[in-house]
Length: 180
Image (cartoon, rainbow, N blue to C red; front, side):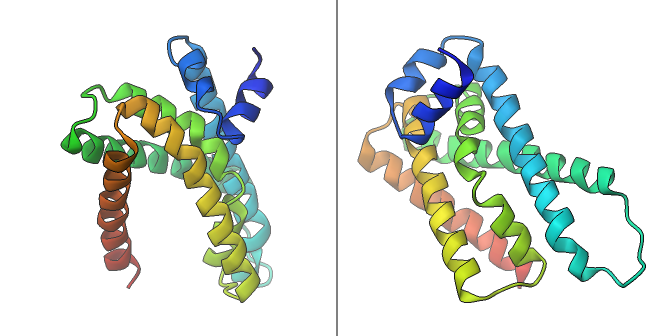
């Protein structure tokens, strides 16, 4: 299989793709490609939407903004994998961390649609359609993430739902303290 057919299976929520790519080195390459692309999409979106925050005539370095976007994507990917692994492990999932890291990285393709909306909200646009698009794209991203984490953790649907709920509450509390 090629990258595109495997990623289409991931986007279609086909759980069988994970058993096919997990034992191979493809999972490493797919992780790097998907998280890098997510960072580039986010960085490009910040370049497009973030200009409205700058004063007229202000200079900035587009390459630096793109590099920061990629760095943010890799940091968020690593942090999300760590938190998901921690709560899945606490509920009885597998002890190995790297399957979570790679599976979350491959599933990052599901969040490509949310990156422009996140950049738009960060730039100050907070109208109804933007929030609706952001909510729909995040729900889809988490739907893509679910089979990936399920295969990595080997948990039942009920236990995995509990782990996701704990992760959302924990990360949500941190975001609330950080933002407000």
